Length: 155
DNA sequence: GCCAACGTTGGC
DNA sequence: GCCAACGTTGGC
Image (cartoon, rainbow, N blue to C red; front, side):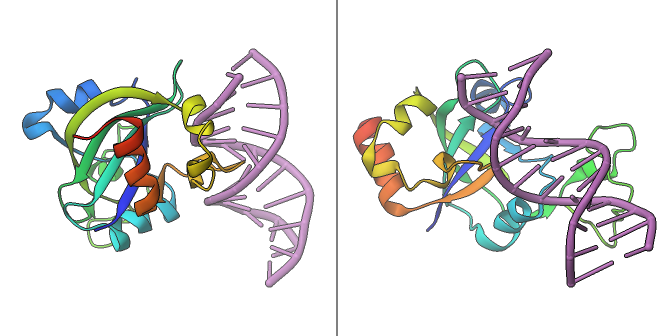
């Protein structure tokens, strides 16, 4: 069992959008970064814990708890010529981009980026490292426990 | 809208 | 394989 933090722009897919999806599950499409793709393709297992993070918005922070709900499979949006995620180099035989499905477990109070920065126990989080832009990052068990236990309370 | 930081591209 | 130019991310 591993843990991850996955960024989403709420103007694209917010925690409420995910909550409103069938089975509260949606494909994590649109990742166009190799390292993030590799985490999904090579690192994720069904049932892994996910911190659902809102980025590029007025109040960035963790907005929900989710879980990995599928293995990685080709991201359909890379084949959509009209879409903004189209990749001319991707073919059905040789897809370049993969995604997993993510299922919302529960919406939580927003744990803002500023709040995360206040906690010494979290200073090692990749999210908080200067210059980090990765949209998917691993979270350590200790970080997960601290955030889900201490910051948002026992579920 | 700004801009620092990082990733990707492409000429050589 | 180097590296300059360009594009993107994402907080502020």
